[in-house]
Length: 535
Ligand code: SF4
Image 1: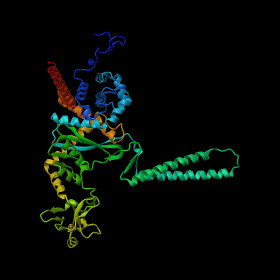
Image 2: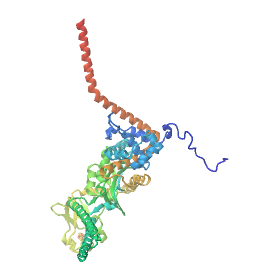
Image 3: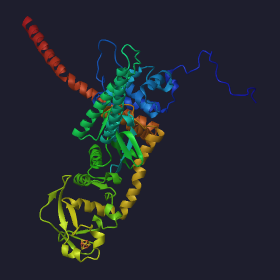
Image 4: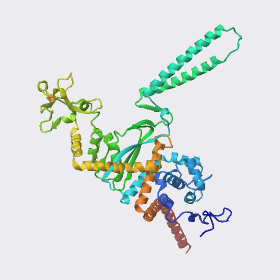
């Protein structure tokens, strides 16, 4: 039985509201202690963090990079990403006050740390992958790759394609024409009026507007010329590396984040930020994993967007078994009810293709190089067979007399891949693909709220993505291992880092020690000789 209608808080006037020790602010198994132990175990100088090797010097000392890294890890794990918000939280959030030992860096210092240390952040992310491997959290045999679109720090309106620029120039031309006519009308009106009459100032306004339109037109023309003379498909005004990218029915102005996820614990083992579609990134990403994990063989799962014959060949050459649904182009022939390329089977024993009517297509003599640089051999049906064929209407176009099939010089790679994709085990693997790779993206975008980048340009964006990926892996590893085991692992790692640092210091001072020893020996020799002479 209480005599209060509601629960009462403590009085603000009481002398002590918070625990007397900063260390009592956070519980013994608070995740912030895990962040602290993780960063303390890192060799920041080896990772390339700015000021990590700084000795005592004149002037105001900078912030220790380990403190700023702890601040960022805490912030990104807790959905606090902007430098101004991080500055505010450092002054009022008890966990951050504990983590930073009451240091309160300004927002410029915080923002500069993320900008200047983009390469070191990438290295920290990579080193965490190696740590995950050491802790046996990575299977290293089956991975899935996928791309996710993230908004850049740029609007769609700030990115121009050739078509968009041509449209803008045409629009400006129309406006210039309209203002030109108003200027002419003004001149006529002025000539009609007597000199000395009151001026309405409209001519000046129109002239200014004309000038502004001409400047905008020149700028658009220069951008169009830049696009026409380079291989860039788009020009971006705010963030030079952001691009208009589409996936499904979504179009964004930003980047495509490529991630490779290991199937054992859904951890991100390799990632890269690009500004193109997924096509052409399969081998690059799979090879990055193979090198990082130092494994002999690797199976990689990807969706249809990654189907690329050159990539499949490069994967096979590097011992990577790729599983990618076969992309049959736009299936134009199939839509027309005609036989497609897959309806022609290759007989390697006699080097011919067999058509649906059972007739043979023989190779023409010379291989040739197609527009994309692939060397191919053309297989041609016989005119006589096609003339008499009852399936002719389903095979040939109205003006065609014979049917051709082109075979890439490495077509055997694609045939092996096709056979692999047709097996029963593969369909089971492909069902696992989305479960593996969509776990991190779902977590990052929905739970952590990472939908966009706060910085601009490839370098800084890659640094920020490394922070995001590191925070995802960090949180997941903490959940898998549990707080105590994680902190114990970090303590062991810190001991190793300390031993390494000690060895480096000893190696550095060894020549000095040697010189001192030699000096000491010669001094003892001299004094011994002196004593002998005196005797
Ligand atoms: S038209 Fe020629 S290539 Fe086509 S199915 Fe008939 S025989 Fe074969």
